[in-house]
Amino acid sequence: MSSAPLPFIDLKAQRRRLGPQIEAAIGRVLEHGAFIMGPEVRELEAQLAAYAGVKHCISCASGTDALMMVLMAKGIGPGDAVFCPSFTFAATAEVVALLGASPVFVDVREDDFNIDPQSLAAAIPVAEAAGLTPRAIIAVDLFGQPADYRALQPLADAHGLWILADAAQSFGASYDNRRVGALGDVATTSFFPAKPLGCYGDGGAIFTHDDDFRDVLHSIRVHGQGRDKYENVRLGITGRLDTMQAAVLLQKMTIFDDEIAARNAVADRYAAGLPKSIAAPAVLAGRTSVWAQYTVLLDNRDAVQQALQAEGIPTMIYYLRPLHTQPPYARFPQVPGGLPVTDRLAQRVLSLPMHPYLDVPTQERILEAVHRAVAA
Ligand SMILES: Cc1ncc(COP(=O)(O)O)c(C=O)c1O
Image (tube, rainbow, N blue to C red; front, side):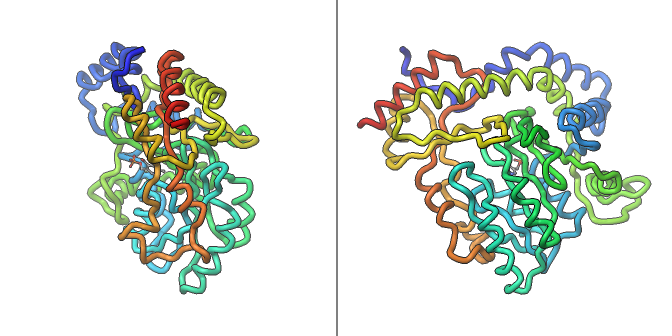
């Protein structure tokens, strides 16, 4: 068995599978020349909305812009509190702070790594005591599994909050037979190349059932345009998805379900083959995951990571430094008693290689190395 370093995510394998189709699709864009909001963008939006089972998809330039555009459209600003996990990628809280509002950090659950409804309930009075107006929850579907939207909804209803599903990592997953995109009041996703549905650059999308909200998002996407982009009726951004990226994504959509099935097969093989001392991630009842990451918990994490690295097995730590511990976010409120689960996870998580093209022999090599590393 080779000891050559493995890729953490093998994008080249997908490229080999789809290469000619993607090159032809890009070639068609080069021919028609509608690089901004070309026909592929509209076609992709229609396909994504149908896939998610939502009335409207508004594509945009990144998952971060998608979050930002939603908060702008909802009028989030100074004095507003937006509840979100600290155990997430920076973009989730960054957009709140950029708009002058206050992220309020909530702990997560150890079983699904997602926002803990009990911790959220405890955080709402903290925001009020700080003189903030509770406005929204950003529930992140971490590592590809939806958050517990059924448990979050009554809290949102009781406090007049709306739920933004940050589904950057979970597009393609479902909860109670509803697909991501249809969960929460509004949902956003990312097409960053490493995401389960990734393009060849930056990209993102927003999902909503609401016609008026769709219209506001269309306006914000192009500098707050009114009848055209030279009539500006509100503040906006340059938030469009490139036609070229839409063309790439349309091709990737043709194999997306097959890739999700392959990711689940890889996850099943990991769960069956990991040493008993490692906590394999669970998919909770009523949910499916697209396995953006396969993240395990273990006590001697750093030593295991080093031993795997020495055998050419790359791993990642998502997230070593939760947001509430980082300088730009330290001044924002957090749930009373701190975020003990988040802090503990930061010490114990390790993400193993995960992609749809991880074949059985390669995965056996990874599993054997994990067994050796844990036993050492
Ligand atoms: C949870 C989460 N939210 C938001 C984003 C931002 O997406 P993008 O990188 O497309 O801006 C990411 C991407 O890494 C993410 O993982």
